[in-house]
Amino acid sequence: MRKKIIFNADDFGLTKGVNLGIIETVRNGPVRSATLMAGADEYNHAVNLARENPDLKVGIHLTLSGLNSVGGVYETLTDQKGRLLPLVVIEQRVGDGTLSLEEVEREFEAQIKKVLKSGIVPSHVDSHHHVHRLPGVSDVTIRVAKKYGIDKMRSGDKGMPIDKTLGIGTTEYFEMGFFKDGVSTRNLKKLLENSKGNSIEVMVHPAVVDSKLQMVSTYNQIRKVEKDILTSEELRTFLKQRNYDVTDFTNL
Image (cartoon, rainbow, N blue to C red):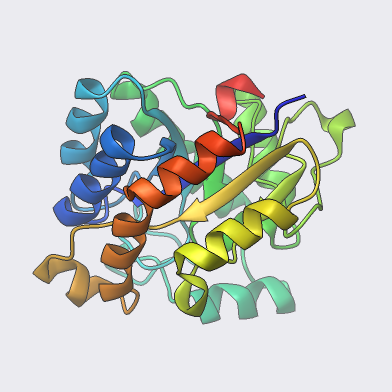
């Protein structure tokens, strides 16, 4: 059996440079999957690019921090202007039980509805900063995804798949090592060769670095390095030699 590899590009919609970088790795690299941020400033730009590039399957990058909410102002999720609170605050409130999971559900539903209204059929869901794996939030994520007919989701770290009895499909292995200091062609090859199971998702963040990205994310310049590696002839040759099935979540 050929091993299935999904290169999923996170943060689709964050900035125009991020969007363009992702599309470049679709046209000239192995990316066939990206997850869209419903509350991001360049959401419409991303949607238009997705329509122009049917080889890209688009999922939803559920978000509880760093952006404006889609659903409005909440008591435990946002400030008074509807800005989602910092991740550290969200995690603290999950820990002490003061985060309203009912508000999380309303916000996730608002994000999914926005994507559906754009005409996109989501291939799967994951989340910004992996918040869908937080206690309580994970149950909400599965419930909301199933409500809207989404039956694929990002798994946990290195072989911690979602319980298949819940009716949600995922890869057998999730690799997040192609990030920060792990961004190199050599390391990416090693991660793929050492991955377990017959289906693997590799998290990637390619981008053309624009001024907006430098303002909104500390993870910026290295995204260009990711893009260059993903579109390189060296990686293309490696994937072909290993006979990997480079695919997306719809083919799990």
